[in-house]
Length: 459
Image (tube, rainbow, N blue to C red; front, side, top):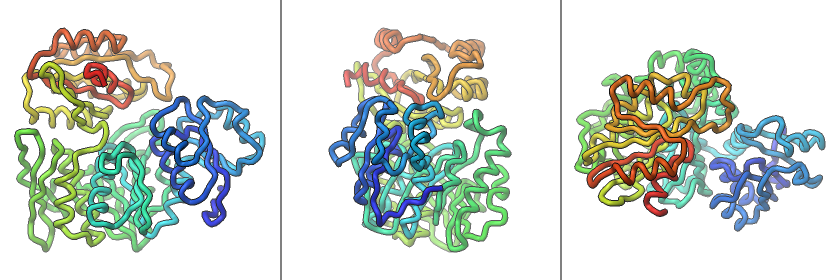
């Protein structure tokens, strides 16, 4: 593997530079004096920001963009082998790194690299940890998979030893990382286009945990089924959190205010219990906050700072994000695209004031929809009325023959009021006609379904 010498800046070209993670990595290299260029499918606020900071960005992929003065190519997992720029780089024998490999090398620059993993909750927990470290004035470098309002972006460059990033298990990319502190929030079946079963997924998380050095720390949810298979043989310090009383950090007396926001108590071994008030909803966020608190306290952050930061945290972009209201209808957007995430979001919505709960769901990828079809139906049944859009293909081609109609049929059989429309225009017109004052509308999915709510609000 090509090793970057950060004391000798070179010219790095990013294929897919506008991605939420790639753009942040490009910014780190720019800040370190590197020459940065790259390409992306379309212009965006992230690419505009990079251009302002000195990067040169092409729109569209073309072999002619790969020049002889480029020293290194970085690509995302979404880039296929037949990409013209990747082919050109190979033919010119330019060294190539994946996004995960570059991120791993960057982590090694920092004294305390922190990696947050799990099937669900990575972005929110990374954001919570970021808020705490910022509140504690520890000046961290942050790489977040969503927009954090307090830094008005997904990336922040600090000058301290702390580096915080998300760690995704898809294609085992997090096995390229070098964490000193790691969080494992949960382990469930997902990305079944890559993994064969839950046993392979659990083994992947075990391999991730073994990356921690003997003086490192793993913070893991004790409620994960067979969590000991992940922690077995580890030489690092292990801290557990969860709903179980046997966890090092456990939560109890969870309540919700009139806005659905959570409040709970943390029980710690050999320490007094304390109350934490959140400005985000749902039991899933209680567990995310518990993990963030455990990590911060392990870094010797004062508990009062942790409480204040978590109380001020308003959520990250596309995580139960209040978009606005129209005609008395409240519109919320959420990134949930796995049955467990859908259940958590709709459960959180049940504590939010409303008459009728509408869920506009865009399934994400054909393999995930096919693998969890019945689970999606069961989870969506928590909504009063459901609207389905076409499946968002992302990186896939529909070789399975699965459609949103299949999910609609299951929901109809379950006795739910469920509609399917092939275009966003049809969805928006239907909602304008049928939603009434006092209703709660959630657009949900990891694709572009957020546009429905934004179009209704004229954003």
